[in-house]
Length: 302
Image (cartoon, rainbow, N blue to C red; front, top):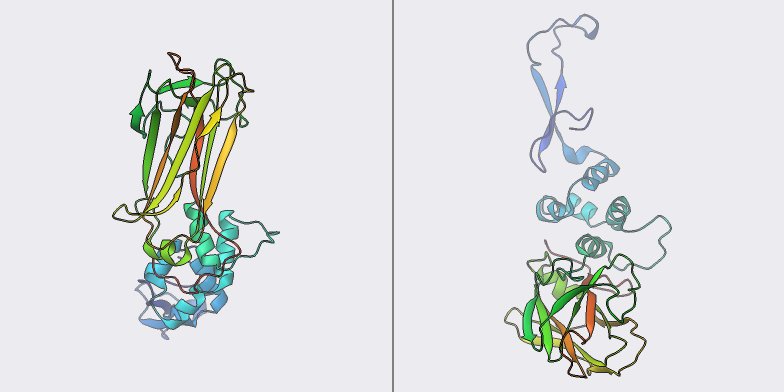
């Protein structure tokens, strides 16, 4: 309840302003029964800046699903750039000195609220959990702690572990269901936000290895719509064992993307028993806004 506005009903309804009976003056009121007069006032009689302040505190999805269809006034207010800019500021998605162009602040807000790494267990903190083992050759996949034998430290000190391959092909993968992760069809098909893929790999200094990665964007029926599959990278024996980042951004991909397939791995080139193949960790798939794009103006309910 907001002070001075009386009791609220359902969304879009009127609210009640109570008035004393005329039987007594304000100075000598001794009424003990409930007020007899109730004045019905429409919430739309509130100043627009007050309505916007109310909308600031309504969850974003409820604004679009429940509030926007109520009337033309609410629709126009909820579509205001200023409302979504303020919501972005309130949530910490931007700062007061933000100077990058944003073509649609409503879309920007939702993409920021959903932004996270969609891969689970990317740094081997939960052993092999959440990964599907596609190939488990040689002595199979293993988890080790950084820096590892004949290895180097990772650029981010928060990363403590990595996955390591063996002397025959080792591949593991995850399939991301975008609808299950909160992304709805129109957001994906009309606005087509960037899909940013990153991976890190490193060899052992004393052994050569081959690393490979494959990422595919697929439809609801798992038809491949876009793919990133660079040639395998081979690193020779007696190297500097440094960590290398691989990155790719999917932009302007075809509509209909509902799944992302991520797979990586490799093997050593010496065919040594044990775990001498490429090490991988800190993989990520992140859906991000594009500040320079001019998307369609209207957005349906999420």
